[in-house]
Length: 334
Ligand SMILES: [Zn+2]
Image 1: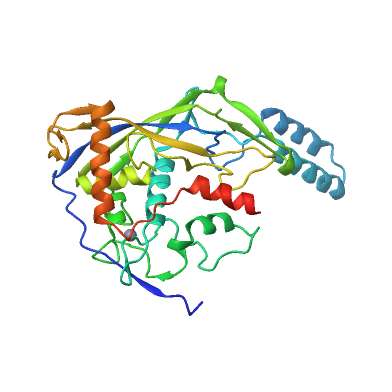
Image 2: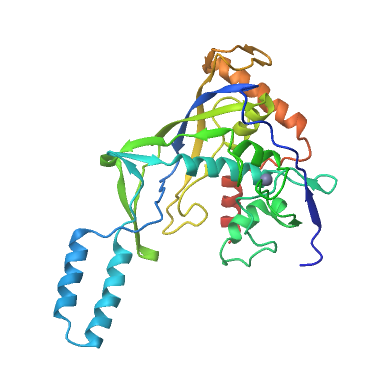
């Protein structure tokens, strides 16, 4: 462990949150499922039937041994209940916090050190192991995919309650004591009637999932960011040119394939970019003025220029990892 290089994190004073400056606006974004997709609440819910049955059995128990056997049968029952998806009304949703985490962690994991310094404190992925977990251990696929960003020691993650300076991603996305400059609304998807229950027999798990080609629509709102940082947001969504990105991983069981069923592959697609009247202009190949809304071809030109800016500025510091392809390669070798 001690032989791992220690890397310094590049930090600076965060910009003011009290003024409105630089770019202010929002993007309408779709997340398109390219496989089955499960976004869990992390909670397991029990049907009323299961609870009634449990109460009935407990009433009939005579001995401690009876109770013990009821408890063990009941935990099997719990395992069989499908994990509830996140919903608002009768629509499946991907919470804004989940989308934000997905974009942020992809960016964090894409930065690599240059001259002993790195731009990201890896706050979201800070607890990952530094040494590669052995094949089959928790997190080994994740580590294989992102090892270039993981295999060194870096300073503590940013915490604005304890330090004056933060890394660029904490300045944009926020950290303890510092509000973020981008806000992700919940992404609304298909109706519950279009959701199917998937049975993963090999692990005894049932999941409610959205079908491939399901679309979740939401809005990403930003303020006080620079064109380069808007480009970074696109980069974190897997967009490299045009308005739709390459496939990225999101949701439950994204790294592990059970019963040969693929889960958790999505693409991000930018539908429009709207600048507020209070915003500065974006002056690239074409100019987007305050109050303008761009979509289609025009939007493709804007994203192309912003991503070019990202690649030129962070040349040698930003990895371009196709995580879905890498995962396939890892699986093929397994
Ligand atoms: Zn940070």
